Amino acid sequence: MTADPVAPLWRAAQVFRLLSCVYAFGFHLAINPDLESPLAGWLLFAVLIVWSAACAVAYLQGFGRRPGWVLAEIVIVVALMLSTELVASDQWALDNQSWPTTLWATNATISAAILSGPITGMLAGLVIVAASAVLKGYVSIDLGRNATVVIELAVGLAVGMAAQTARRAHAELERATRLSASLEERERLSRQVHDGAIQVLALVARRGREIGGDTAQLAELAGEQERALRRLVSATGAAPRDGATSDIGAMLRRRASDRVSVSVPAEPVALPAAVAEELFAAVTNALDNVEAHAGPDARAYVLLEDLGGSVTVSVRDDGVGIPDGRLETAVREGRVGVAKSIVGRMNWLGGRAELNTGPGMGTEWELTVPR
Image 1 (tube, rainbow, N blue to C red):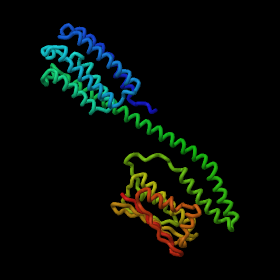
Image 2 (tube, rainbow, N blue to C red):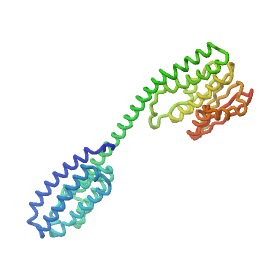
Image 3 (spheres, one colour):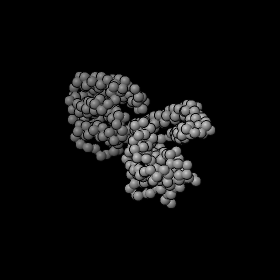
Image 4 (cartoon, one colour):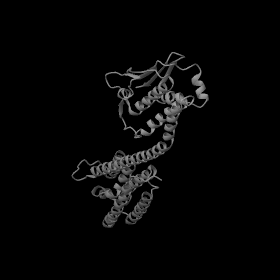
């Protein structure tokens, strides 16, 4: 079960509840002889003590930390405040605070603020103030003599802000913990992959090229997979910050070489970091296919276009092209690099991937993502 980030506030609130009960007891001892119905006053005070004990247990154990219980507390507090009319005269009510005392009634404001934040806490405080106003028959605006409204609003705001801050800090801590665990696991897997699969693929690629003949094709496939795995394990693995963007143009420039020509706008083309990473990965896969399948003399041309509402990257080569039915055959044989690494990525981003190719015509991918 996830720990409650505001549990310390609930515990502190019950200490305040105990102190307020002690104060309410002293107040009741002092005023009970002045009540019209002293016995009824003691019976109502017994209700106050029993309910306070029930609230303390419920909030400390956790089962009372829900809207229904807090709402019940507010209702009972208001009912006890209004019960002053049953045990005291109208003049006594005008000259004194309600018999449960404003300090004890503030417990309801505190509970609401801890549960749902400053707005709810202040609203609960206003309910307490309204009950006091109904009891006296008027609304006092003399803050020098009656600061109840200020106290209730201040308590609701301060405690609610503290609870809200605690929850936000807890959420950030959990997010940092998950990210740290994810990075550690990624590093562990990277070491395993590097010590195993990558080294084996590198050995197959090297020995295949040395042997030549029919094994050269196997060497090329092993080399392609080795490069793909190295890109995967060398990625940072860090989740992009909320609102972070990346210049896809700058990312594409890194792929420029003697055999790859890259053309991008002079101005940065910003995309959400996660979108830019996925688009760049799709382009990288298309360029890897050019290197592996287009022929030894094939050149690739990458063109980035910022269309305002969308961004398009074209990857074209002048190689041998893809024979008709080749992609369908690859999918049936379980080789789904194109289907998942390129088309799948674009679909996941809500964009599209269009392929134009044919024997001797070269290959052109047009990758488009919405802005």
